[in-house]
Image (cartoon, rainbow, N blue to C red; front, top):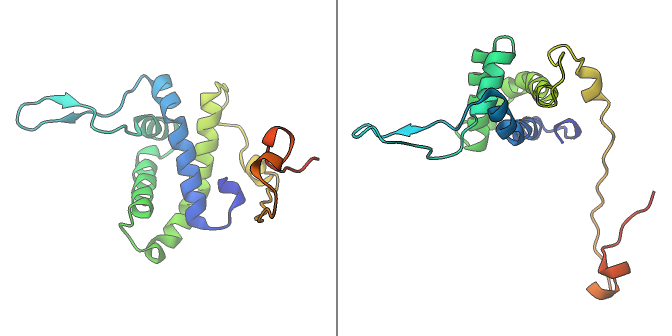
Length: 159
């Protein structure tokens, strides 16, 4: 999805959400679990919310300059998703970060698939060759749900 939108914030979000979808796989591959929360008074530990420990571990350990990159991407994600910063103030930084985030997602997919040379697979050509997607918004006029098609299926295009 991130390759098919021109809005830089949508692109960033799509690529980050792709990483979040891979997080459980990355956690398993790196044998890391969700981060725990510790009570400062009694020391009790629990997982208060699922975390992106798989994403963090992958970026910090598998991508050149990963520690700084992870902090930067995570920060931008929080600025965008939680409106912690005006979009106009971070637009350039997000624009600069999106290509690297796209590469990180691509490499994470290759890693998750078990490709031995996942760090070397050329990614720009693949990301630039995504097929065009077309959406059509329309209103269906007349008829009842039972008359939509075979077995009540929605109308569709055949290729």
